[in-house]
Image (cartoon, rainbow, N blue to C red):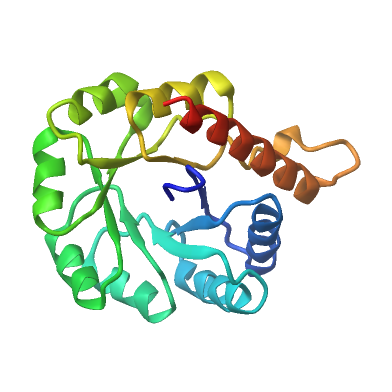
Length: 214
């Protein structure tokens, strides 16, 4: 996460489409991929992604997002999740992930929530929703707690202006979803996978440039 600066955040109900999209991201340089638990049988799609990564994308770190309770987290851990992300902090998930030595990245919107998560063993906290809290929140948190590692999700865009603002504020990395997978911007010949690959590659280049400035 810290190395590339970008986590791809994605959900799709079709395993074939999800696998193709993950592969397109991998080809574009993405090495951390968060598949969100947003639909029925999402864990079954995740299982297929996990198997694909083991065979074809061995450098990809695949994790599960939108996880709000420990039983759901346990399902994804059993299917090979290498990290768990949630929109909020749940101490039971923290306890479970600590036992399995798998990173848990909870969503936090206040300094108290971040401190509580850190006390529970969370090395990285998710600033969520990013578009509401803004870069100034990240900067304000980092001032008295410079050891804090923050991943921003929500409202992140693959533009130089947006990414520079987050990394300048002190974000360790950003999670990017709809702005990275906007199929409405695909070329007219339908090469959406090529579009995603190029979009990821360009976003990573912008992120690398922004991170190197600070």
